[in-house]
Image 1 (cartoon, rainbow, N blue to C red):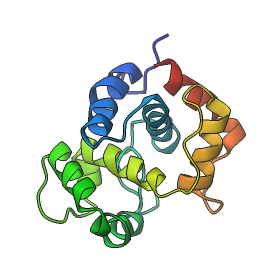
Image 2: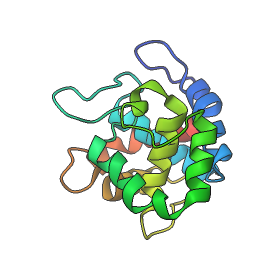
Image 3: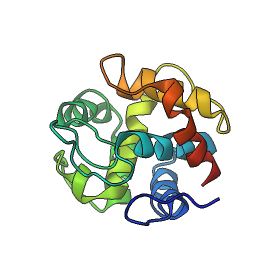
Image 4: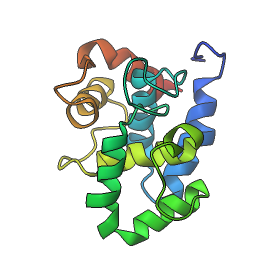
Length: 162
């Protein structure tokens, strides 16, 4: 099955050539993580928009700058090995600004994965689209976001199939 976004980019290419290598480089890969991050990109931007329309969120995974900065200040600051792996995987140095979520897709994928790493519950099964969609709603989009876990299950199924 070939899933394409409006630019014609093959979802499988995005999943296997951008997301998978980025997550493996920071030792946070695995099928569940790759499918979750890929599905998140489908839900949040369709891998089309690098900036939220009428909002502050940035990159394929539509992370808000406040969330980005909080990850560095309250999570990665205390995990220097992970922070260094993220920098190495994305070719960055120093403390990256949120604008890198737009400019560096590997970095954006890593930061999406780290946001999920902060959740207390383990990742769901790699092949359970409904559970991945629910996990996204609970731990990434949150109750304040507009995502609908039931409506987005098909997007997570596309991520699994890619």
